Length: 352
Ligand code: ADP
Ligand code: MG
Image (cartoon, rainbow, N blue to C red; front, side, top):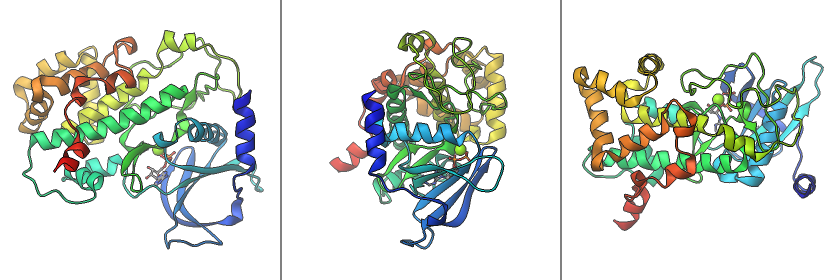
């Protein structure tokens, strides 16, 4: 109850906005549930391109606003900095929700992964300058380790709050230039299980490229699809029973895989990988046995990277990408994995 009072008071003292306050800039994205623009405040055109981001969302925007409000209070650093959300009562028949965030930066992890320079492009962003060091597997591994750690850290924040994202993929991870860290965006498919906000619109399809094999995170125990947030008491026991957070861990494992193997970074190759893995009953070790003997130089290099330090990276990867949710590590447990024992990128650069 206190939480709701606090939320209400906090909201009272925050600036409120309406449609006319914003000047639309460049379109950043368009999905089936909304359009995203870069915007600026009409009375305060601070930067030419705008230092805010606007998503005009359909009816599911109500849930996305709810999630963002909750994240802002409970685990602010995990996600893009949310400013405000409101229902825009236009003449249109369908409701339109406007969501405003601070503009975090130009690059998503998907953009960065597509560059031939990955992961060195990320190193430059993380450290704020180009490192004049010899390139090699060790260095690449340290950069990838830093990215995965930041991702797991953000996820741990969400999961500890009771939120499962359900659409973790490189396109939904933004590099925040201000804090020089990766943050999660797009809570449009997220579900908050501790207070029972769990909407799974029937037409909503989880992104098949990054989705774990289990289709329904809370299967039959939870009510389906309220059209607006409805709070019902849901026991944390159900969370323990279903471990819905492990869905995000599987997706994060696939991102780890794509970072290690350049040849798995395109959509088609990832889809093909998913097919191969399914044929191996989602057993990565079995998959490795089938592909390694006839693997390309790129694939071999990926295995070499994961095999560094006694194969600790491979061990972590195989603890994330597993068929049974129960057998996957939680975000918190993954952060304690020995893969992260070795100094990361930032620690090393400070020592130099
Ligand atoms: P969609 O539902 O279209 O996937 P997203 O919330 O993922 O909506 O946003 C679409 C794109 O807009 C992202 O991939 C990213 O490029 C950009 N974007 C979203 N939020 C921000 C932000 N806070 N700062 C910078 N860019 C953002
Ligand atoms: Mg998205």
